Image 1 (tube, rainbow, N blue to C red):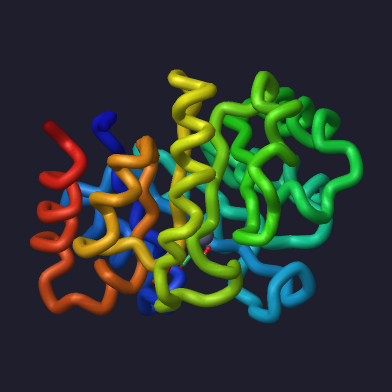
Image 2 (image 1 turned 30 degrees about the horizontal axis):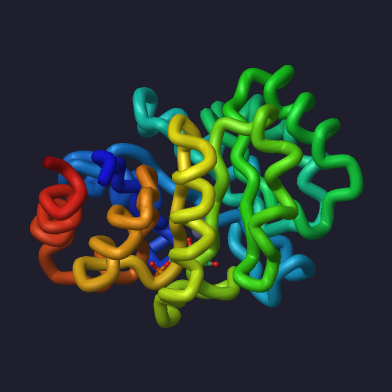
Length: 217
Ligand code: DX5
Ligand code: ZN
């Protein structure tokens, strides 16, 4: 078990108060913020893009911002997201033709590289690219919506990655909360996204504390 960071997903927060909500989560002990960008094409839902992320960056100057790009053309948003002040650009492998090119462009733009896998995508789809990535995101729900049920069967992907890549950052996203985080950490995930478990709670600080205490020795 490695000690893990907690990155709340603001997808189900009150987006009209994005900066206040984000600051509140950071004050509650969030290690980073996970920003879900959806284009209504790669997934059947829409959220926001780089203009909003740029405004958020001006309000939370020191936070580590990860964008989870659930979009069909991730290569299109690299420059705008870098310009918006994003620290890590996590894109899905499924729609991308030239993954090494996207990895290289993300790095050249000064951001960390994350490669995401939908539940149906086998883990060996990414092994050839891992030397070009900082992180692999193993989705534990179908991307598109918060509040879905955690897919425990994805833990074998996390275990396999951790066994083969001891130094890789491995993130889980979808249905993770106090009752499912233990399985993720035990499998070897060290970046934990949690959305509705934190946002829908009337005491987010307490949930974040609980999550952190489960994943730190
Ligand atoms: C799903 C998003 C997740 C989601 C997590 O498409 O990528 O980040 O918001 O929310 P919960 O934790 O509620 O599943
Ligand atoms: Zn996400």
